[in-house]
Length: 153
Ligand code: 4NP
Image (tube, rainbow, N blue to C red; front, side):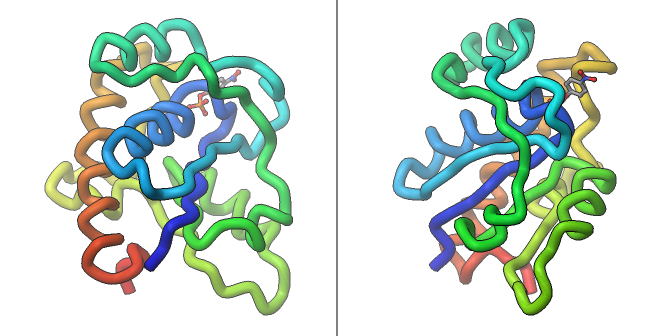
């Protein structure tokens, strides 16, 4: 069973820390982390408005700090989950030869949403909309993990 899951977005201050914060409440037995494909916010806590919106739903993100995705993450996790297509492409560009671990879109776990990515609330300012989608995808991810590994293959 997949237990080590890395959530990835661009800045690692909005979507992926929110995904981590939601998922660790939903499935505390899983090992979770998050990272950004950029180095823009390394060391920073999640964006204030994202933290506030998450805390209003009971998710405390205040212990999280941004870091950049690194090649070694392919060896340290069982499943890597990107928030949009750009994230997936940036991750796949770093995949070492011979490494087969799955890299999936978070919205693949929320087919009922009709969404093909998690819109970036840093730009849309819709933090609650992002959290709504993240909660649905997190529930779908938990279900997929319990049913068979979570890779959706
Ligand atoms: P995230 O959002 O990828 O969900 O963390 C962003 C946060 C900051 C920036 C871009 C996206 N930025 O340009 O600083």
